[in-house]
Structure formats: structure tokens, C-alpha cells
Picture 1 (tube, rainbow, N blue to C red):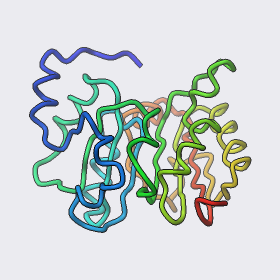
Picture 2 (picture 1 turned 30 degrees about the horizontal axis):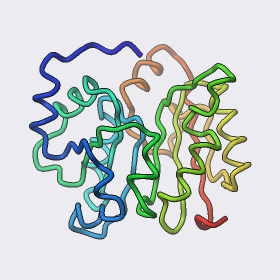
Picture 3 (picture 1 turned 90 degrees about the horizontal axis):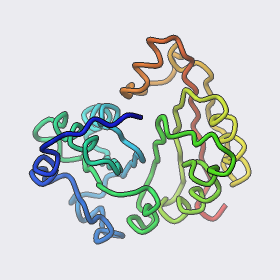
Picture 4 (picture 1 turned 120 degrees about the horizontal axis):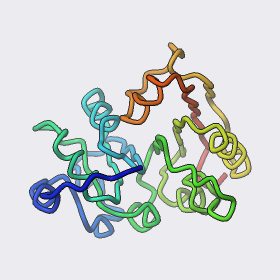
Length: 213
């Protein structure tokens, strides 16, 4: 992904109260942050925020948190967030810190168009690798659930095997989400691009009975 530099990104980020640069201080206290006990859904690699913003607007009784590491991308996301959207927070950090940020607080995790890291030596960097699935075990509350979308068939196949090996059940699989009328899932920026180009969008929902499975 080519990143275009946003010249005033530091000022944009500093001016957004819902963007947190040191999220580890809220570990175990995210319900206190939101001042309610609503479920918390997390997107890792939220990009410019189109999916997460739409989800937050459609679901006011769910709290949404997005993780993004690139300042220019975060700045563009902040510019899209409408006023009076109290159930949306952006975390400015690396995905590697996810288990240092949450402690059995997340109800659902979204992985949308994650970097496929196609080279075998980089497999552990994939967000569905055993390395990351181990980290997710400590962030989920009662019943872990992961929802993934991707245009990358090799990553999708790898992820299905990785989930199964980690004790997840495949609840729903779609090999062509664009034409799947059963699923409501707002499009990401990448998804709009790939759909226009005619690429199939792969989609899966996986879950465990508990974090101890």
C-alpha cells in the first residue's frame, strides 16, 4: 500500500480526542473509558476507517475500536469521523501490542484486507498466524469471534487452516461476499476497489465456545 503523506497529520491526530496514542494505560479498563458495559468490537488495521465508522453508526449499542499504525492513514480516518460518534475510538499503535492493550474485553475482532505477507519466511506476521491467534486468546471475553474479509485466496486458505488448528469453528464461509445477500458488512476502501475490478471477496466468521478451548 502506497502511503501519501499528510503534511498536517500531527495536528489532526492531536486534535482528535477519540484517537489514543498510548492505549496500554487503558488495558482492562475499556468499559470504564466508554462509560458503559456495551460489547466492544475491534478492527486491526482499520485503514481510513470507512468500515468501522459505518459499523459504529449502524450499531450505537456496540463500542468500536480501530487499530492503525500509520499516521497519515489515521489522519485521513479522523477526517471522516462525524461529530457525536461516542462509540468509536482509534488507537495509534502496532498490532503486535494487542495483548498489552486488552484483557478479556473484546467480543468480536475484524480482520479486513490484512497484509497477506506472501513470503513463507514472513508467515508469522500474518494477522491469522498462530503467533497472533495466541495473542488474541487474552483479549477476548466469553466467546471469541473473528470476522475476516480478504481478496487474497492464498491468505484465506492459510487462515482457514490456522483457525481450525487453533480450536476455532468455521461458522460461516463465503467465497463471493459481493453477491452474498445473507451478510451485511460495510465495504472498506480496498473492498470497493477490488469489487470494481471484479475480484471475489472471501469472507469467514469463526468462533470458539470459550477462550479456554
